[in-house]
Amino acid sequence: MAELAIEVRGLRKEFTVRRKVGRLRRQRQTVAAVAGVDLSIERGELVGYIGPNGAGKSTTLKMLTGILYPTAGEISVCGMQPVPQRARLARRIGVVFGQRSALWWDLPLRESFDLLRHVHRVPSAEHATRLATCRRLLDLEGFLDIPVRQLSLGQRMRGELTAALLHNPEVLFLDEPTIGLDVVSRQAVRAFLAELAMRGDTTILLTTHDLADIERLCRRLVVIDRGRVVHDGSLEDLHARYGSRRRIVVDLDEPVAGGLDVPGASIESVTAEGRRITYTLHRGTAGQVVARLARLGSLRDVSVVEPDIEDVVARLYTSGSV
Amino acid sequence: MAERLLAYRHLFAAQIRSQTQYRASFAMDLASSAGFAVMDVLSVLVLFRMTPALGGFGAAEVFLMAALAMVGFAIADLIVGNVERLGVYVRTGLLDAVLIRPLGVLPQLIAIDFAPRRIGRVAQSLLALAVGFTVVDVDWTPSRVTMALLAPVTGVVLFSGLFVAGATLAFWWIESGEFANAFTYGGRDFTLYPVSVYSGWFRRLFAYGLGLAFVSYYPVLVLLGRPDPLGAPEFLAWLGPPVAAGVAVGAGLLWRTGLRHYRGTGS
Image (cartoon, rainbow over all chains, first blue to last red; front, top):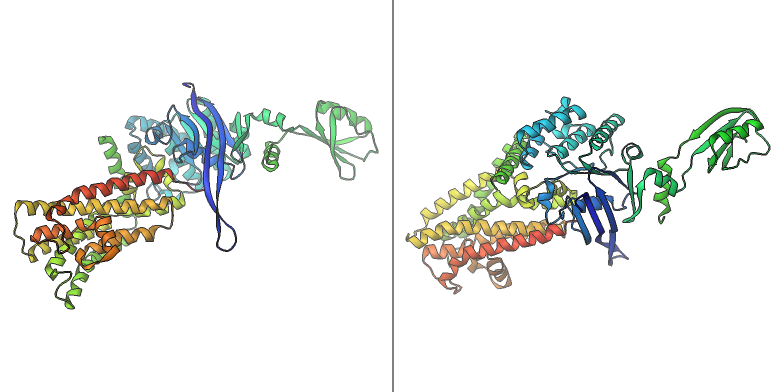
């Protein structure tokens, strides 16, 4: 228990929704947004919590941070129960909601940071050191004195990240921190998180729809669908489990009549009037495929396509029950 | 504890700085809200052009009653009146940002929505109360002085409780604002007049159910040394503070229950 930053057992959250049936009648219905999640995260881990819209990601995060009251199940974050010990826990965790601001809208960014120093009761020397680090790593220099409402989304998000880290939290919860950001800001945020994760003293739970975030940052992925965990493991495990393979695309000068079969690989498609052949590799190597085809005719181009997380996730999202 | 209070003070100051970012609209607010307080009290007197007495009380006595009610309401409104914005926080999910800070939710909402323009109303109502005490002949005794001091505090606590309880409804029912207003602003209007002008279930609900008779009616009876035309014993007037405390505690419990029902909004 002491080693775990987050431990969750049988977590459920049910909402009652009223649905219109007929002209006036409404039907009450109980919907489980989170339907029995178990999760153990060790100190210093960075875990990607992914899943389609409405899978229960945000709801889980809100229960872990003490915002929502769980219907059932046990939660321990930093050894505390989030709802009963919300205020105490808040001093030890940092939270960033991509679609909400924790900053003071009408005040300059610098003043928000100063307010948070008082809210979290951080000694000013410590505060100054951490702020200096964030200023450097997140490049806040140009806009510290601008009211938050006038910041661009990318600037604001860098501000939000700083705000969540100034009290040196043990666990950082990030709910879609890169949503809506431009490429440059996205990379800045990603690089910053990678650095934070590498130092290893902050546990990070991240929800995202951005596959580049996942590939770059998350060694461990927890995939949730319809309120349940459907995968918990590395990105490689996910590929292995859902049968994502490397593919090899071969362009020939002239179409060939037959003999395209290669042991250890299967033909996925033949296009461009027989001049482009796509194989999926099972046991064979790309070299074997190329060697075989070279005997059939002259090759114009060969490319190897690495398995794409996008495909895996898309398959996960659409298949429903996996 | 001291550190916590300091944190609230900083939130408070930040809110005032935020408000002064929009100087012109702040000035307008201040001017208009100050005007309204005077109108509320004076509107009571208009009735006396039609009738010499209301529920057995003369114009000066009702004026004192109305002023006392306004003081209680204006101060409560200044301090906690802004919790009525809870509905906005619940609907937009902004409450999330409040919940992730290591401070109480209710005190934070009070601090971050503090509306300094309401100070104007407090000042005006206090002025009205001072006038009220000069136009009514009070035969001052130690117990009447005590009542004169306790009554405004009772009003502040009771109205604060109503404000919090009313706002809490937003956890279950987001569009509850108007319903809650019926009890907060409606409660204020109720206390402007003697309880004896009302009748039936309406009187029972507002005067005794919500305890609003203790805001201005009973205190003025004590100050004037008059028996209650409705027959309540004199000692009842002194139960105001515990009744107000009860309402405040009830509102606090309701608030805690409501917070557990907070559903947030999508992502």
